[in-house]
Image 1 (tube, rainbow, N blue to C red):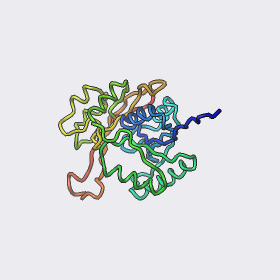
Image 2: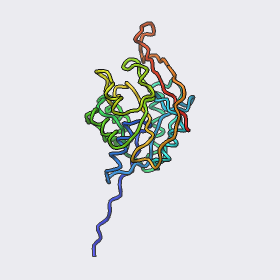
Image 3: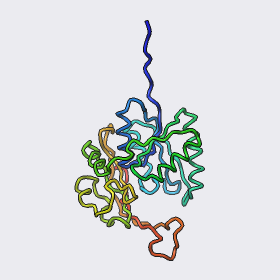
Image 4: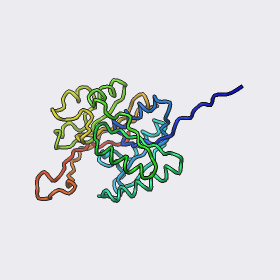
Length: 243
């Protein structure tokens, strides 16, 4: 009697920031029997021990990974790391993942074509295929689908170029979406804002946190003329700490 073998799902690592887009990518991947998310991979500031750009503390990421039941691989970046440094660090990290037998990578990008091409180019050189589970989706529909599925998130970073600082610390829900100014992407795909997801159908338990201080930061625009007013980016962060 012949037996039909059962195909094992392909292991992959998911680029993880702790925010809504990568969470939605994880949600879709979890429903696809062809794949198994074996690692969450996050880049953090070595100096501040926080997620780059999001400002979320390492301890909160640890609690996310524990609640999701997926091991978290942390990639540490030096302060003010340039693209060359970033690429070198990533090459080493991807090599380590390949040694574990993980040759697929997934990202929560929605429509930034140049970013997708850059990711594919960087990874293909190491023999890694990139997947984009939410690619091409209508971001407004995706945002509301995320909320309707039962996920809960808070806005942790706001770019002053797009949004008033008062949006920082708001729950990511229908009221937030309805209050966005024209031209702001509902998923913040252009970098308008970032979120931290603390509950939802993938979590075994909610992530307990408390909102602490509001922090403003200013960064030079890459390659910008420091004498020009628009050459610097200003952000407001809602700091969170584990409760």
